[in-house]
Length: 137
Image (cartoon, rainbow, N blue to C red):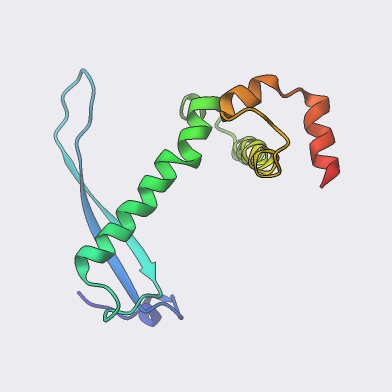
C-alpha cells in the first residue's frame, strides 16, 4: 500500500522504503527462516534512483555500520556480549564507547598517535591520559 511521507508524519521526506530481509538463524538448534521488514525514509525522489540503486544505498549503509563503528565497538569492547541491561547504564556505556572511538579518531587524524589499530590504542590508553585528551578539547 502506497502512502506519502506526510501521511505517516515524516514531512520533508520524499519516499519511504520497505526492504524485506530473510533471517536465517545460525546455531546448533535449527530454526526456520523468518522475514523481517525494515522501513527507511529518504529525501531522495523516485526520479533520482531506481529500486536497485536504493537497495544498494541501504546495503552500503549497513555494511559501513557493521564494518565500521559496530565492528570496533564489539571487537574492542565486546559490546554484543555485554550483560548490562539497565537503560541508564547501557546509555552511559554506549556514550563512553563512542567517546573512546572519537578520541582515537581525533588522535589519529591529528597525527598524535602512532598506533594504527583501535584495539591496540585502547590497551595503551590510561585513565589519566584519556582525561588529558578530553580536557584538551
